[in-house]
Every structure is written in structure tokens, then in C-alpha cells.
Image 1 (cartoon, one colour):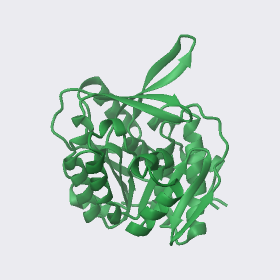
Image 2: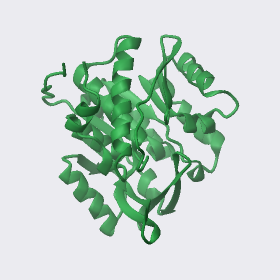
Image 3: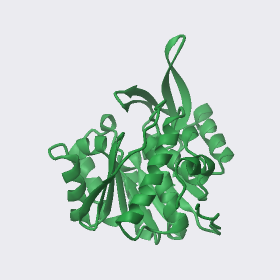
Image 4: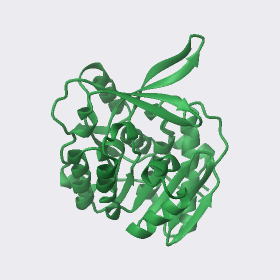
Length: 315
């Protein structure tokens, strides 16, 4: 039996981070071509939340000109309330995404301030939000990370963090890790991929890294691992659930659809109260990622409620 429709009232999710254009690699009769798609990890999560029934506000910076206009128009069409929080920038910022052995390799071009120069969010937004989520390049600069910190401090709802590091954009790894881990104790959930953990904790196994973060910072940790079982570190234990088999057209945004599904379920049905309850949400989030992998592009591939319920209704 599926859950009934939930009246969210004035509740909404707040997402902080980048919004830009991904150039996604595709093969056609011409060979390898790159198609422009709306993307950025936080924007993907915001769109995913909205498509799954949770109103959302996205705090981001938009590039000038055509690329910025395209992102704004897309957000308007998806009913995502986007507000920009930076000084004007000179050029757009573009991500080039190329599939590589089950993962996506990213290259970046343009004005980095498009994604890191995020001014503080009004504390009233953070306090009113049912979930607050930040990820990726919002953690790459002092000013943007301070915006995230203040939002977490003001928040009264569920707080989530997805490091989603981009090593090619990090000039000082130790500085980055110090800033990132300073936020860990502030959140209720850290969602991370095994690829991320290989950068964050290269000297220990994925399982040990997840448990170490969980035990050190007393927060729930979820690790996605492509087609390997998804890990949960909760109440001092590490458990795993299987991942559905799917045909992957483009893995861009798969992790973001996982986060969107999980956070939408938290917003609409409450925080899981035990391991089995977390597993229920995680199974559904894995189904959301499978749906996203069957499309091309990040935000455009986020599943709707109908698409997700066909794959994994809540029971």
C-alpha cells in the first residue's frame, strides 16, 4: 500500500549550492558529442525534491547571459524557487561530464565565483525549512561554507550534507578537509559515495571510513557505491542493502536523486526511527537513482512521484 498524498502546508526544503550547465557526453552517428543539460548537484537535489512533492528553495549563484537564463527558466518551469546570493560574475561556469568506468569524470571551465561566491541565507529561511541540504562546491570556499554553516546553525529541521568533492577544484586538500569536517557535527545525515571516501579517507576501507565518521561525529552516514550494496552507519552499526539492477544511460545525478528521495521522505513522513526504517527509505532512494540513470543529464532525469512509485512505493 502506498502512502497517501501528504499536505506539506507551508513546509519546504532549503538547498544551498551551485546551479550551472553540464555538458554531457553522448554517442551518436557523429561519435562522442556533448549536450548541454541543466545541472549542479544542489540544483539536481532541489529539482528532485520538488518533483517528489516537497516545495523547495534553492540558494545559488547564476551565471550571466544565456546559460544563467536557461537555468532560471528551467527552475521556473519546475516550480523551484531559486534566489541568487552573490555579486555579479563575469563569465559562466560549465561542467563537462564524461562517463568513465561506471562513474562520471568531470572537467570544469569558466568563472569559479559562479559557484562559490554565495552570500548568507536569511536565517528565517533556514529556521522555517523542514530539511536543509548543502553539497559539493558550496564547501570549496570560505564564504560559501560560512553560508552553509550559518544556515545549519539557524535550522530547526533535518540537516543533511553531501561532500561530493571535486578534487580538480580543490587546491589545498588539508584546508578543504578541515573546513568540511568542521560541519560534520552540525548535521543529522552525511550522504557520501565510495568514490568520495577514496578522496576523503584514502588510507582506510570504505566500511571503516563510514563507521569512523559516524562514531566520531555522532551522525548517520550513508554510502552509495554504484551497483554494490549501499551502506548505512547508524546506532554504532554498519548494515547494507542491495541495489536494483538497471540499465545505465547516464549516471550523472544518480547520487543527487538518491538524496532527493531520502530527504523528500524525511520531509513528508518523518525521520527514520530505526535501522529497518532507514533501509525502507534507502531502498526507495536507490530506486530513484535507478530511474535517474535511465535518462540523460542531472536535473532533467530526476524522477517524478509516479515514476518512483512504479519502481519502489513506500509500504
